[in-house]
Image (cartoon, rainbow, N blue to C red; front, side, top):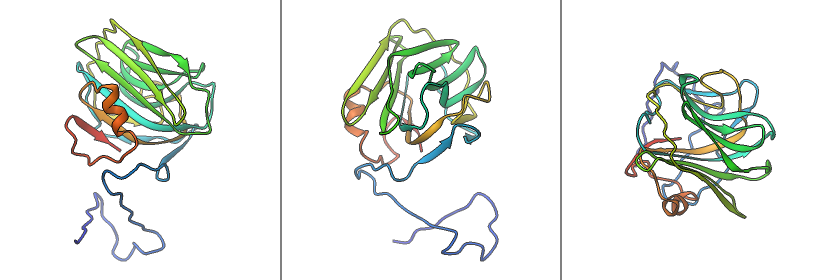
Length: 212
C-alpha cells in the first residue's frame, strides 16, 4: 500500500533528503517498546498543544510511561489552565509523590517513587460521579495505588496543553523521558488499564481523546 504524508507548513522542494528526514511506523497492537520517546532536560524543554483536550467537569483517565531523570524536585509532566484556582496538572512533588491538581484541589499519592533508572507507567483516574481519584504507579517489578474519595473538583477550563512544564507558573520543568501519553474521557478500570499498558493502541479505541 502507498503511504502519503501531509505537512502543516510549507516545505521547500528538495529540502528533505535521506540525511535529514526519516519515517518510522509502529504496528498497532504490537508490544510496546521504550525506544521512541521524548526527553526533557528539566530546564527549558517542553511541548505545547495549541488545542489540547478538554476534561472540564467530567470523568477522565490520564496515563503515560515515564522514566525520571531527577528526583526530589517539583516537576510537571502534563498541565493546562490559566490560574492557580482553575488548572489541571499531573507531576511530582519534592517528596517524590505523584501530585495531581484539578481545579483548585490538590492530591498527592501516599506513595513515593524513588526510582530514576527504569520505566514506570502512571495513571490518574477521576470518577466525577463517585468523586474518587486514583493514582497508580506500575513498573516491571511492582504496582501501587493511592485513592482519595469525596474529591470535588470544579475544573472548567481546557484548551492549550503543555507537556514538561506548568501552564500556570511557566516553571516546574520535567526532567526525564516520557511517551505513550493517553487521555480518555472516562474513568477506566484498573484491569482495562493493565491489559493495554504494554501494547500500542490503534488510536480508535472508544473514549480515547488524545494519544501521543
